[in-house]
Image 1 (cartoon, rainbow, N blue to C red):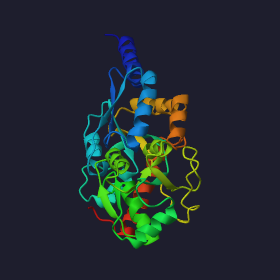
Image 2: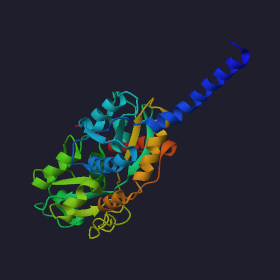
Image 3: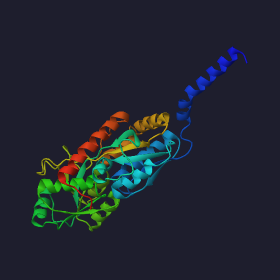
Image 4: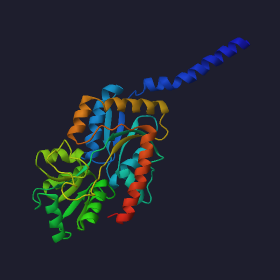
Length: 324
C-alpha cells in the first residue's frame, strides 16, 4: 500500500470519527424514551412531566414514556434512574425533594450532583396551603388560631419524609408556633387524594397538583407561599397578605440524564426540551398549574442544584427535622 493511499484511508477514518457524534444525535432516538418520575401519578412531578413528555413526542419522533417509581421521598426512583444504562433512553425527572434528601438520608445510593447530567429546569411552581373544606378555617389566620388552640389535632399530609411538602410544614410550625401531626405518603398524588377525601386535614402542596382542586372548590386554598399571587388562583392571597410575612416556599422540577449518556444525545434532548417549553400547549398548561416557564439548563442548572443542596441542608439542620 502506498504512502498516499495510507494517508487517504487515515483521513477518511478521522472524518468518520469526527462525524460520529452528529450522526448519533441525528439518529437518536430509535425507540421510545423513558422518563423516570420518582412519585406515583397525580402529584406535582407528574403534572409537569406528562405534558412535557407529550410535547416532546413529535420533536423526538418517538414516544416518551412516563415510568412512576415512588417511595422514600422520591429516593427510590432516583436510585433506579442512577443505575440505568447511560444509553440515552432513560432520563430522570428530579425535584427540589432531591436537594433535601442528602441532609435526611445518610445512606443514599445515588448523588444528585454527580450521578446525573443536568438537562433543563422544567417548572418552578410556588406552594400553596390547602385544607379540606371540613376544617374550620376560611383564612390562614383562622387556621393558625385553630392550630394554636388545638395542638396536634390537625394533621398534614406530605409526598414523603424529606420532601418540600414536609419541610414546608416544619417551617410553618416554626413560624406560627403551632404543632401539627405529619402524615407522610409515597407521593403527592396519594396525599392529595386523602386531603380531598377528608382523611387528612391539610397539605402544603405545589400549585401543579392543587390548583385544579382549588379551582373546583374540592379544596380550600388559604395562602400562596410566594411573593405574588398566582394567575391560576388569583383569589387566594399570598402568605404575606394573609399575615405570615416570611413563609415563601417553592418547589422545582428538572430533567436529568444518567451519568455517561453520550454528549450529543444530552445536547439534543436539551435543545428539544427548550423547544417544548415554548410550545403553546406547555405555556397554557404551566399557566394553569401556576408555574412560569423557566430558562435554565446545563451547567447553570447544575450550579443551582448544588446551591439548593446547601440551602435545604441548612433548613433541615435549623428545624431539626428527623425522618418519621
